[in-house]
Image 1 (spheres, rainbow, N blue to C red):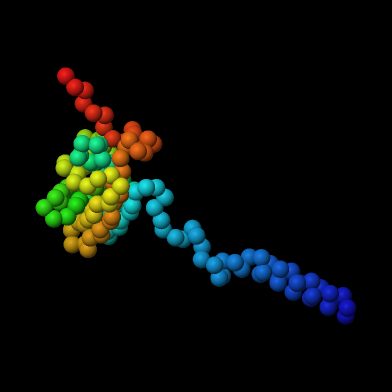
Image 2: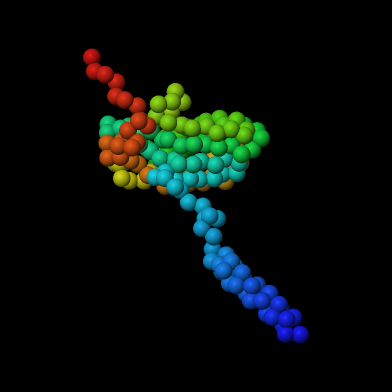
Length: 164
C-alpha cells in the first residue's frame, strides 16, 4: 500500500513540476505573435496586398524615393494606387502586382517611385495611402530618412549624375 502511495505521489509531483515550468504561455502573451516592423520602414495591409518596409529616402535636393516591398497574397493581379503626401503636394502612382508575387521598389529600379518635389525634410514622416479596387485603403506614416545620415542605406539611392 505504501509503495502504491509513493508511486501516486511521485506522479502527482512530476505533473505539478511539469505544469509549473511550462504554463508560462497560459498567462503571458507570446512575443512571436506580435506584429512589428523590424526595420526603419513601416507596413500596411489592404485586402490581398501587404506592403512591407515602406520608407522614403531624401537625396538632399528635394527629391525622394519611396522604397517598399509589395506582396500580392491573392491569385489575380491587382492595380495598386499609392498616394504620397496630402493636399496639392500629393503625388500618385499606380503599380500592377501579379497574383502570388512580390515586387520590390527601390531607387535604382526602372520602375522606381520618385517623389519630385519631396516637400518634407528628412526626419519627418509623410502620409502614404495604399489601396486597390474596392478595398478600403490603409494609410501609413512613412519615415523620411537621409542617406547621408544613415550610411547603411547609401547603396539604396541612385548615385548623382556626373556633371559635365
